[in-house]
Amino acid sequence: MKDFNDKVAYITGGSSGIGLATAKALSTEGAHVIIFARKKDRLEHALEEIKSKRISSSSSQRFSCMTMDVSNWDEVQEVMSRAVAQFGVPDVLINCAGRAYPRVFEEINYEQFDETMKINFHGIWHTTSVLVPYMKERGGYIVNVSSIAGFIGLFGYTDYSASKFAIIGFSEALRSELKRYGITVSVLCPPDTDTPGFHEENKTKPEETKAISGSAKLMQPDEVARALLSGMRKEERHIIPSFDGKLIFLLKRLLPGLVEFVMDSTVKKVQAKRGEK
Image (cartoon, rainbow, N blue to C red; front, side, top):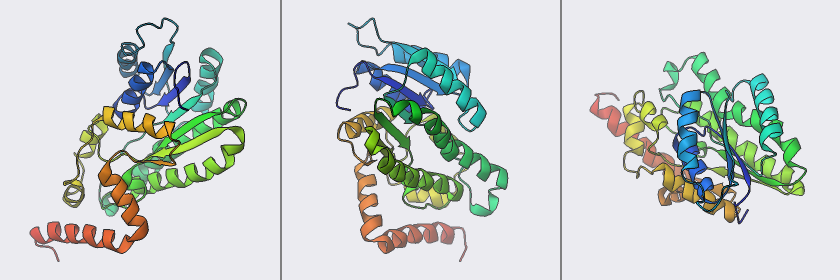
């Protein structure tokens, strides 16, 4: 996927954050873009932003949006099948829908855990299951959005990390299976990014979690989108936008004890300030 011009791109979670930034970046590259999310008003507003980034010389670029809840299997089947009929088979599928409500494990009820898994992981399984049979006929590219919390378990993210670890395992296995059909699979692992979802996370984030991530640079969605397209051109298995993220990825594989020691030390300092042992 060296050139995105005239390619058909499907993006779930495309009405805001990284999904929207990626949709705009692809529009600038000449792609035909369709975005999916749950809220119609946000979708329509996002669509106008995406259209404004189209190649000025191109009147043939196509754009659309459809409401869809990725966690609902029946709805995904119906909406994605309709999208293929109306918009064409995707050359690019970017699974970007997701959310997080960080809390300590004992404060996470089953309903939250179940919802996290359904949106973050089942949603990717759903869209991929529907679209792969179409994409097999001509090849393409699938990107599943995980997180740095998908390869390193973080305090306060027991449900979120579980879902994001699952995405990485799924993507690695899927990459192996789909190679023979000319379909490349990558996983995007962004750090904290300045999105509406990130600001929502901060409302429930434990102090220990804030301390662990506090020293890292907050990336902008456009930066992540640029890194994503660059990583796709290189067919990187794990697309990690930030230097800090790449370093953590390497250290987690080579020196996992060191990474755990640093995080544990940070957690203990926060707890000591509260007078806890």
